[in-house]
Image (cartoon, rainbow, N blue to C red):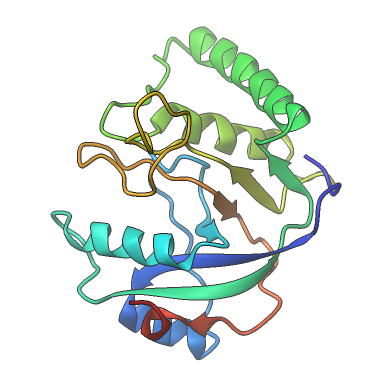
Length: 199
């Protein structure tokens, strides 16, 4: 949670081609509000990785019940603003405190904690990040964006700590993700459709 790093990043959003065209006509992004979205409610981007954004859309197109028929990716210049950065000690500490408060409230209410699931659904992480946003609601310290890195499988080579971009088919891990709640639009330039630039 800081403004210590560069404020602007290039982000890439995997989506349906018709949605990409709407975004190019300056229609607003629609926030994802799934209970399992890893970084909570918001619009998701891959930082500096248009191929991974397109790959995500292609994987989504193969899932049952998908709305994606023609995968595409849209690029945007994003102002991170006041960012909950889960790659920093401060961001992790703030999130851990939110988890402790969330856990206590759930116990007092007699409600079981949500759980992260092996198939890649992050119900617990989503609930904690959304709770952290609610804790800050109405204050001047409301986060504009959330940044996180999620390790992908499989490993790049035996014994390596590096991971391949292509996820294991049983999981939907994500890396270099940025989520923006975007209560105020944070996209500072017109998104550019990139699917035609990628092999």
